[in-house]
Length: 118
Ligand SMILES: [Zn+2]
Image 1 (cartoon, rainbow, N blue to C red):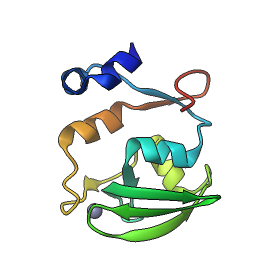
Image 2: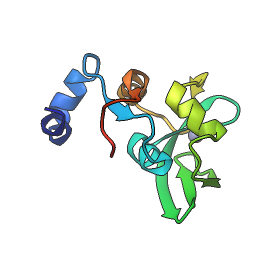
Image 3: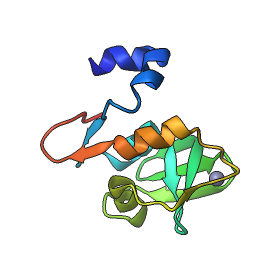
């Protein structure tokens, strides 16, 4: 079911509000970021990720507002926690994250027992 929706862009948008996406809590942090394509900055602003280049235990992230930074692959990092708990205050005005994307993000559930391992 999940796969089917993923492949159909139109259905995906329609089902956005009712369909929850589950990810395993212990999923690889970078893979999760790659999938979600959102990044909560230290100030609580949610940025859209334009590109993420993973090199070993580090990843270079470029946001849509052209911020570039290197992060460590750690499930215990601040960003990792914030993503799991979906903590953010507002979306970045420069990144212009579509509302359905934020909606999808906020309905994403990290589950210990089941969900996509990516
Ligand atoms: Zn931004």
